[in-house]
Length: 348
Image 1 (cartoon, rainbow, N blue to C red):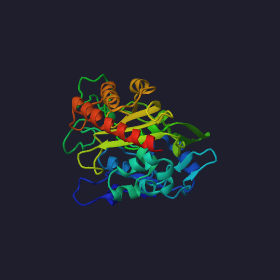
Image 2: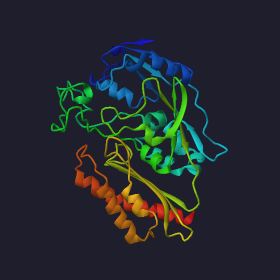
Image 3: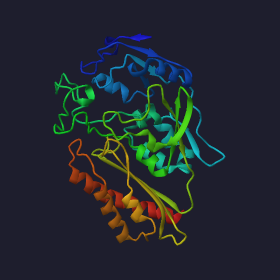
Image 4: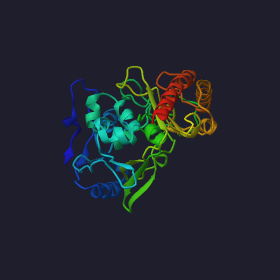
């Protein structure tokens, strides 16, 4: 079906999509993948459309073909014989946040899904779409006939206007998924469907850390499932998203962690910390986690570890927030998230 830009026109003029594109509705995931593989760079998948459609309106994305995934039946969430929870990537965030199965098996996922946007968006947005969203910056996410004129590197231009001293083709736009850090901290896997079949891999393998091309998915590849491992005894978790107006805004910084205690319920046996919304991709902390393992998690120790984490992370100044502010934000809220995770681990 051909949709003409004027058919997408809305009141106010600035929300128009002023180009033509083909719109297709396959009913099988395999057909969608084969079609995208055939068309390659000229096509985009669309699940909920809550990221793609705004980007089409402001000109970040101009696909000649939009392959809708809305008619592909979603597989129900289920815990397998190995104890892992499997979730179809087309599951909406609203379903995830209200699912008793998710709350019981992987509560950090339900908590992070609840922080995404508002309720109306979560009714439409999908898990896969949230993970595969584009990066953002104040310059990139403007209609260039309104506030800016020249395109940046990400739009095919020859300069990074927010950071003009950047080396050519270095884009410091920020990856803003609220859910990706939670999945990384919990140790999730993902299944990617391509022309050669399904491949399962750790979620970290999805991200390049490059603002120009943040995802490792190739044309013709589709995020199909997310897998959450079962919780372990004496395991706790913490999650925090800093925003200026609650879930209705993109994050200032997102912090997620898990930890497991020894039988003494004081000494850290395992830990994982992921920070999001401050770099071109979600970042796992290595040095802080190494210092955490084997340590008795007293109040003083958690303060010391949060300080260390704020020094280990190297946030990009973004959306009006300076690097020192972002580090302070992470130091304060990660310490509180650690305290929450510790209490949950001692109660489990």
